[in-house]
Length: 258
Length: 270
Image (cartoon, rainbow over all chains, first blue to last red; front, side, top):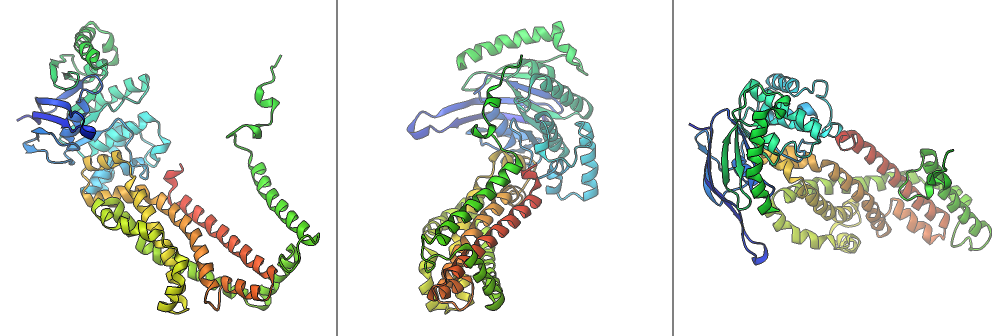
């Protein structure tokens, strides 16, 4: 059984003031295996975020359905953790309280929560920042907490919507390595949306290239690069070959969208 | 050679939006009070205005002292504070939960919003004659004036504050498994709490206007009552003293509210 099965999912936004409706997604079907790291690559406005939001249950498909571990998605839930591009830590909670938000909602005891929080604080390298307010953290640190917060809930799948899009290049590289490290150690089904080709290759074990609007899956590329991956890999011939290939695919689409 | 920078050529306080030093800020604030009192002294001591219409600052202080020591003015102050706080707390107890419910559930908002928006424009002071008919001239009537004057304002502003909660925070909470109740309790309320406290601070200031109006009409105690009595005696010194006392109490309550907010919501300032 696949972890996530996206079955002929389409999305049409009604036209504004009698205008033409927008077809964001033409029927998309894809199966995602357990513990696979799948990146969705596409030009801006191609509907990749819409697809992710439908999987999260934050948006409803106009047609088709999403099934996660055998259960059809009808709304958002703790089994699908999400990290957003915008900074969505709760500003009134400390770092530790943010990470335990979902655990409290589950009704977990204090001692159990504390153990999990300490574990994830360590994994994202924020020891000593437990009692800081989100405002006191840099953008990269905030996104690390957001990742920890989503993972602490132990979701069936982790959804990431351009989580490093607002970060500077250096920080983004470091965040990619951190996320990979966690994935290599813990194994998790991940769906990662990005418009950055290098990021899509470096992180993914499989990359779905989406076409310009109306979005559909244009290419389904396996990334056979070995793990653990190191940032130096970005300069190796295998990597560059994939980059050229995906750049070709996405260039055509970007031209249509531009 | 050092080129003189443009900022050193002209004083910094002439530049728009440039902050001034703390001593300068405090000093300027005090300076205006001094100028104000000086102007007041000039027109009163200089005989530009008859003492019948405007008492001099010295006379005002003398009258104030006799009010406090001989006429039991402290009791009036206490009564007035009690009325404001009582009516205001009652209004807040009704308005904050209702405002939160309106902000959170659009059906509740659709149900109450048109009426509350209408009621907000009913002047509280115009209700005083009616309230005297209903509740007499006792404490109930005073509390009701303040209640009516405050409750609709708080409801509407709280509803807006709660309704403006960042949608991405709500979505994040949903993906963390929050229930609808959890969203209200753990996202909407804490997110709007600093704004709600700020709304209460603002409306408490307005409540002071209503209490004085209520005391001017049909009352036998309170600062407003003293002011009416003094008018009958043409004692402008007492009237001005009463007005200044109200201003001072407002200043103190404002300060206390700000300090409480700072302690309650450190995250919004960090």
